[in-house]
Image (cartoon, rainbow over all chains, first blue to last red; front, side):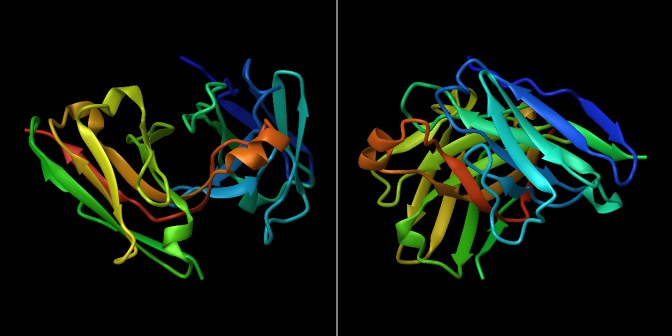
Length: 109
Length: 130
């Protein structure tokens, strides 16, 4: 079955830049999406179609894509950005079968 | 404001059944795909099922095929998940989510378009245990 691979954890100091990667063989053929989940809360969409930002999401959140890897970048990290981040895409079957990465815990030191 | 409110979770014995509901408001429910996504305690997100606007297409993760059924009632702005033959590994918070999926024309223009979730409910906990 299709898999998306994320690092389990990333740590940065406030004000620094955090980069969270997500790798998958089908990513050149399918867009990636990113969700932020804080403890006890529902996920929130922060990036769609690799690099688009929904309304209400701060500009410090950005996304990029290169080959089989997509990257979520958080510039000028703030304490409130500490959360789990999940990438999501679909397999290349042409059906809406969704796949999530395992998630990355972002720790703000 | 888009709102999704799940209900119906609880404690059930292995082999038992449960029906989850999701009440939607703040948008035209019948115009959107809808989905269920679950999260086992301390674990990551797992997609469970999607249903098309008119209910004519349904998709499931392999682990629930034949046991779970997604359905919707557009007149009641409601989404459902009937869960049968429940197992301990089905224990999770179940989220209702609004799906975004593009028609064949849009996907023929941009083949990279794929399904995603733009709004989520707060979830309902299902515990399968004896």
